[in-house]
Picture (cartoon, rainbow, N blue to C red):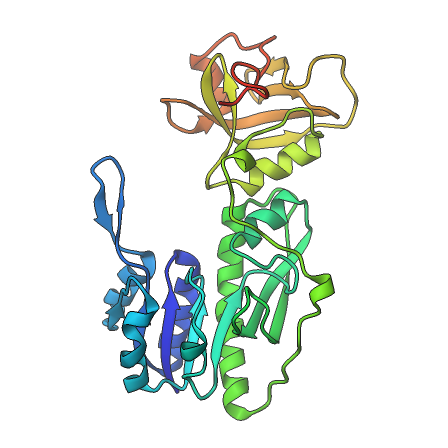
Length: 318
């Protein structure tokens, strides 16, 4: 099978690795252009580009996909595999491969169509998600499905943890899909649009902890934004990123949501939520490194009686 692979972040690497190990011919890898990052604005290649170069694969980085249309026609790929590429393919490119364009999506479609399915699933408190392979069409994750694999979400699992597991599941499902297509043994299943939900990109507003929500909702938000971009609030006018919390019960307190109601030097900081309380166990104050709460409390005190998130703005955030 002659394959063109399109992908950019590390979620795509297990799939590309599995393709390389399968013995199929990867004719080209298409990825996003190098982007400036950090204080020095140094150009940084995508993780897929870095991995492809280790494998000795040809890498293309067009600004627009129309720039490589003629090169794709010359290759005449059997299939184009797309994993977290970040761009919609034109009808002309979708029609090029004889077996079609296959996408690996990190959800059980038609649920969580869009660019942030892993983050949104955890933030929404889902206990089950999965991976779907599908034929791409001109819509946003609306193509006919081929295979789905269900994956449970652990009680304390973060987006980073789940991301890695789904990337491995996606790689397995991709190989199963390609072999099935080659053998003509895969049935197409149209998506039921009435069951569809959308997982939009994360915004700055999504990062804000609203302490009037329940302890369970706050915990889901914190683990859903770990390791990127992080849930945030304010402490004495400084941004405080919260990386891990425990839900320590639904008993309703009498303090204002966001109030620090207890400090355990060995465990962390107890904060009143709209319903229940959370124990902050890992955090990062503006200008400091990420650390566990016990370490934080050895160098920063006191914080008891402080109300988090109420230093600036309507909800404590700028």
